[in-house]
Length: 621
Image (cartoon, rainbow, N blue to C red; front, side, top):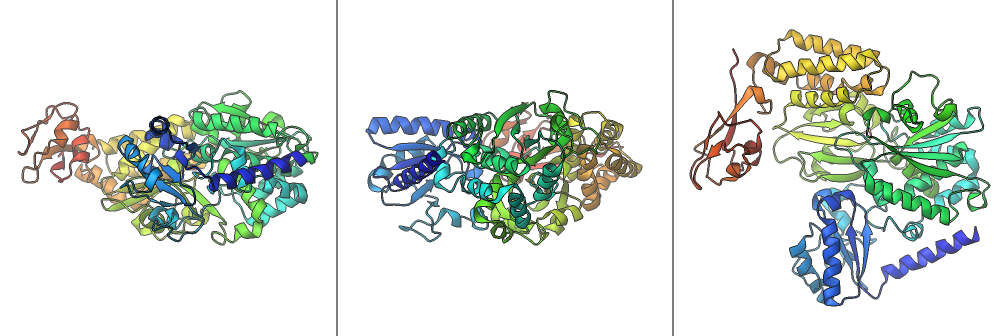
């Protein structure tokens, strides 16, 4: 115990020294989004330039801070000055930025903002947190992401890490559950079940051997909240797992994570090893008499393993297929023992709740949905990235104030991933909480928000998500295995112009059958995209069937493309992207599109800046 307090004190001292370093410090965003944008090259080139210039600079890795559309990020902290952030850093910017900014503070490149403790301008530089994408956010679970080195436990400790665990040991298991109850935390995996109740059921279940499982599978297309959190702040998840395991008195825990998350896996393995070294995992943690071991279980990426009983089967080494309930995992789960399963975000929120108190956490969010929620903001939106907002914020605030809106007219937002629903613009003022989204026919889900504009065909969207859930069905129950395939077939008839109006009724009937008859949540929620698009965008289904027209010019068999001569400037952008050389013409003159060569890939339509490519309906007799 004394060793831990000594480490805690040293960590705080080293963090303070880092903040007041006599030498400049450079932080580079090295999450998956940053690396995909070239952060690895920025890291290498930074080291190279510093060596060439013989500059003594400390260069550190941090995780994703949120605005992925501005990656790669580089923060520079000069002695006596706040940490300043630069966005979209590339080789050209880097060579200009270093050493000019380091030597005289003038590089000609305007910083995005400072990351100081105040939101007031410092030295003429605005606060990073006053950026439009960040201004309305409240960072609780993401408080460390992009700020600390995720591979350095001392950084985590210096910012209050494991104070929540110490408080938990003071309260005892029952006290921890009571604090979670006061906080009003609900499952962030999507179902919204009260976390304290889940813990209590498992704690009270008979049986000496109990397990805790963290669901880090995150299978929704377009979702990356959990991945970014594990990459940017792995210790928050692990501390939350220790607290949750202590509450239910489980001595063995697993993180079920998809193998497609190599960076998150590497950082979690490193963090787990470090916790063992520090006495924060293993037997008799901090002299509490409680011991815990945490292991990683890598999954193969099956979407159905997001369902608890399928996940348990996979951890046990069996095929990931759900079983009927009861018994529920809380009474009979892994190896037949009581098992508690929580989502990454749920567990990573726990340390802050324990450190700051349940009442403090309950002061954020709405009446029935307390706290904050992370979302992956993607699609036809100006500002893409990872956000954390208070529960109860409206979709309008997220999409337009935080996300900057769409470049073309907004049409819909998909919440809850493939199991969620597509909500039209009439729901823009809908509060984002569990009850409101469910009432509109969608779900919270794990936190994916896909934004769509007028160039989106809602029938095509429904077909896309149905194809996904149908392919991911484990096949165990007939309604899901057969019903989703029949639904996909009807949607294919509609998007190809071969359907009749009676097919809409058949589709709606199938939705009800699959929803009511499926064994697990995958099948029960699979019809949501179809039901919501039929409810809010029924006219598009009717256009496809009656008029054989796709207004968004997306469905290939219902559209053919042509060049509008009066609008074409001959810029040749369409010529450059056409994979079949179907578009020809000299520069600065109107082009010609050969329909016999056109494969309707839509590349020309997407890239044209002058609306000179038209998608016309094909009349099908």
